[in-house]
Amino acid sequence: MASWELLLWVIFAIVMAGVTVFGVGVIAYIRRENSSYLAEQKLWLSLVHTGQPADGVIRSLRLHSDNLSRGGSHGQSMCAVVLEVDYTDASGARRTAAIRTYIEETLLAVFQEPLKVIHLLYDPAHPASVVIDRGRSPLELARGS
Image 1 (cartoon, helix red, strand yellow):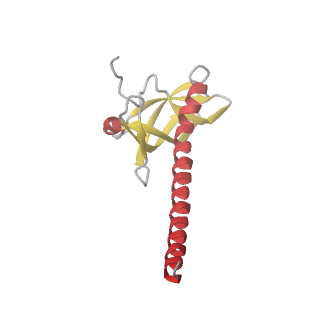
Image 2 (cartoon, rainbow, N blue to C red):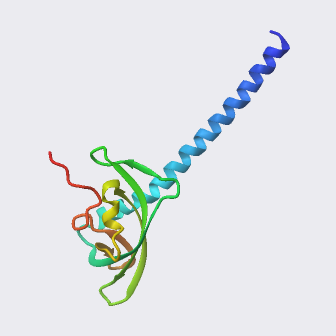
């Protein structure tokens, strides 16, 4: 094998190693970001029967800076957002929370209405643990069977 062929193979190996490392980094970043938004849904599953209901007022809605999205339960596009909400707990204390969650793209306009009231659930033992009550403030449109 000629030395120039060997040099080409070495360059190819270095480039492919770089592409592989970059790809692994991208996948790790997406998994980390996705898990932080899915954590709200997991918390909701634990609070759906034991959580304290509260009404919240949306102060702001921010889309994920990298336009993170995923497929919903019926293949629709779900956008990663951060909702800043104000609510009052059972003791009368006013609280503010930043809720990271996924909302169906077609429902984003509903959540952007000024001073929109949404339904929340929070952990009575830890009032800062707050989620959107999907039963009363759905994040996905209902689909027919």
